[in-house]
Image (tube, rainbow, N blue to C red; front, side, top):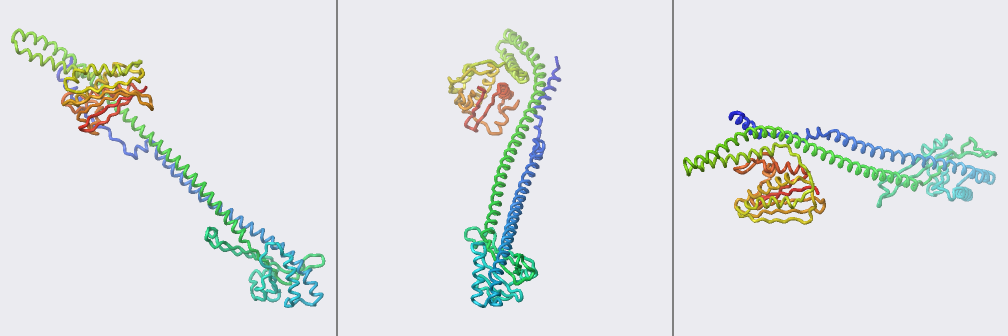
Length: 501
């Protein structure tokens, strides 16, 4: 048997252990680093960066494609113009130059007959073809000798560099562009694209081959505005399609990232809860060991004190009648201390639930019947509602009875001036779980109190160990159940015990 000094020392150690400070919660940044969220943020950063790079690459690719299409259009139109110019060169020389020289001895387009003959041949050769104007320059002077546009005839110096190159025997083209994508929108001015091709007008030999003698320069002007507008429209469609695809990819990626972020945050929170639960379990394990040791050492002396007080009570009745109540006080207080020690031992004893099919209504009714005298003594009205839809549940009847009894006792103690104790059983329609609702109309609790009530040794009463609700919580946990608490100060509290169906 331990001495009183050793027992007191253990009690001091127990009280100090109960007042151990709670571990500080890690900061959000530290918790995220521990949960691996920083690498996930890096993945998020690279995902959005890749999306921007893909978008810019797509826009650049659409620009390259449209420019390539424009170059192809220019090349094909230029080849077409050169082919047309060659054909026109043959027809003008054979159908106009030779007959005119034979008939008139010289070419003078100021002569209406000669001009009409040339105009007829040119328009016949270009009829139905994509030409806007056909112009012929003199080889000696930079003057327009003939044009399908009468306003151009006789103008000087219109040839420019392209005219000079053609005189040197080098066919060339000049492209004039105006307008862009915005001009195709409703209300825009439209786009313009003209290709002017300059080729030397050569003398044709008897074999049909062009001679080296250059008699002038032929300019063929084509209006390619429709083709240019089609290319710009294609470019706009490519850009719009790329933007839509990128927007869809962005939304999909954002959804994935947000979902992944939520999953990581959920896992982080679950990890924090598990760590807190593990720390709590470790503290309870050490606390249980200490409580069991101290309670065991206190229990034996209490038994001796109670037995001695009972013997002393009997002797006082004989020796000094009327003073036996002093010994009765010792017996009563010893019994109270013994109940506290038993409660300590219940808390420290490892729970080993033996689950068997049981009737929840029967357990609730048993607790209500046991507390009937206390309920009547405190002028409390009982509102008992037991559901007939409850099936048998897998539970440990004795352990669950103790848990429900502790919660009902807590409700009774909260109503010092009477009130209503509401006890109800029901079945959740969406989950099929069984629920026991225990409510009172007592003084209620603040939010801070609600967060503390299931912690060991917490109590706001003058008497009691603060273990009743902690023991009840552990029992419900061993039944894979949960306890929900709703309370308002001055209006009472409600405990909902949810058990899997």
